[in-house]
Amino acid sequence: MSPQARVWLAGGLLAAVLAAALYFPALWQQVRRAAQLTEKTAEQARRELLPVTPTASSEPKVKVKMFWGSGIDDGMLKPVTVELPLSNDPVLRAKEVLNTLLAGPVDSEARTLPPDAALLAFYLLPDGTAVADFSEALGTSIPSGIQSEQLAIDSIARTLEADVPQVQRLKILIHGQEVETLAGHIDLTQTFRVNTNVAGAPDGHAPSPVSAITGPIEKAVEKVQNAVKR
Image (cartoon, rainbow, N blue to C red; front, side, top):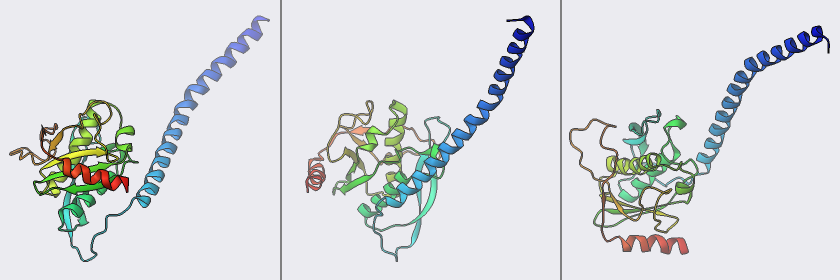
C-alpha cells in the first residue's frame, strides 16, 4: 500500500471513530428514553389490572401519607400526602393504603416495592397484630441488598403506622407462607413493630430500621394459609 493510501485510510478510520464518538451518546440517550417510556406504559397497564379494594362511594376523601423513597438512592423515605376515599374499617383501610403504596409514586425512581408485587390478603388480630400476605414478586423482583430490602419493609410499616393506627405489629408472608428472608437479607420470620412512637423526629427522617419483636401470630397465619388453599 502506498504512503498516500495509508494516509487516506488512517484519515478515514479517524473520521469513523469521531463519528461514532458523537453518535453513540445520542443513541444511548434515545435508548434510555425509549426504555423509560416502555416502563411507564407497562406500569400504567399493570395499575389498570390491579384489583381495586372495594370502598363505599360515599366515603369522604381523607389525607393519608405514603412513604416512598426519596428518589436519590440515599436509603431514606419521604412521606407524600395523597387523598383517598377510605373506609373506617381498619382492614379495608389497610388494604387500600397498601395497594396505593404498591401502585407506586409518579416518579418510578422513588418506588420502594416491585411494580409486579401485589397484596394477596390482609388480616388484623384483636391485639393489633397484622398479617400481610404478598405475592412472590415482593421477594423475587426486589433488588437484592440490605438497603433496598429494609427500605421496602420500612415503607410498608411506616405507611401503616401513619394511616392505620389499629395496626401495632406486622407479620409479612409470601404467598401464604413464612419465608426466612425477603431477598436474602431481611429476616421475615420475625414480627415487625409498626407503632414506633418516634417523638420529635421530622417527617421522613425517623430512624429507618423497624424494631423486631416476637409474638403469637399463628391464628392469623393459619387464616392466610387456609385462604390460599381454597
